[in-house]
Image 1 (spheres, rainbow, N blue to C red):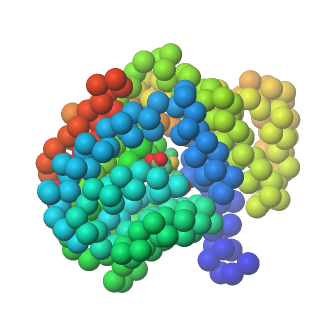
Image 2: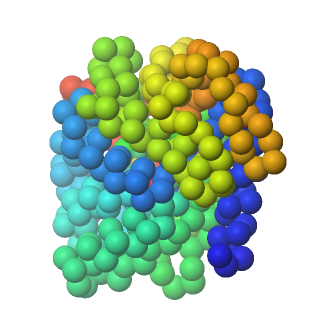
Image 3: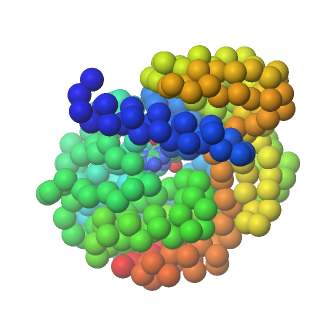
Length: 312
Ligand SMILES: C[S@@+](CC[C@H](N)C(=O)[O-])C[C@H]1O[C@@H](n2cnc3c(N)ncnc32)[C@H](O)[C@@H]1O
């Protein structure tokens, strides 16, 4: 293990101990994303219950053709949380002679193989995968992106942040990107049945994504969690409106983590992720407070899913 890997392991252990010692118990959602987690999410996107990807993909071709003349030719695109790098194809196809694509993600191995696959289709675009955690300040390696720059943050990922954290992210993104445009997705859906299907079911894939956290704790931190003692549950909550992912213990049990013992009562839950549902006006106000001037927005008629173009 090199120094960076040791540092990442120590941070994972510290975050897991802090979250699992709290009341209620939590684990940061960013640890969902190892290679298995990324692969499961790719399958979730293809599942009929998971509406956000389908609704955004329906919106994106029209958006891309309107964004292209606004951002000009020879643009460098910087995507936050690029995952399988599927949506970027629609943008790259519409933009005029894009110069570079910088894909930034926390899931290193998955990111690198996604970019290797993508690069074969876009020989004229310089592609750089950057492993980074966008919940912290991110500085791009020198020379990988030059103006004009278009930031891209699709999907519902902004919703994983509380309003305060989303403001922090948007401010940091402005520093990372400099003078630029930024295309960001936001989901306002409040239809409880639709949310329960997408976040609670999706063919059992959502449960697999969240339960995989125990595999990571056991494999990477030497813990001994029993994933069969937990069931996944999606809960809707208000003020602000959000969907929370919980892993609920079926029986009381104690587990080893680092030099500590984590005890769970029957019915006690560990919150593993949160998806805030931001209406377009609330989201625009959050972004404007961080210096992002709204340029245009597009709203999907079926779900209300919105894509926003800002300028800094
Ligand atoms: C819900 S997926 C969305 C993937 C893709 N952007 C899409 O819209 O389909 C979230 C992506 O963001 C990445 N991610 C999550 N938290 C992150 C963080 N703190 N820093 C960097 N990447 C992160 C995950 O690895 C994953 O690829």
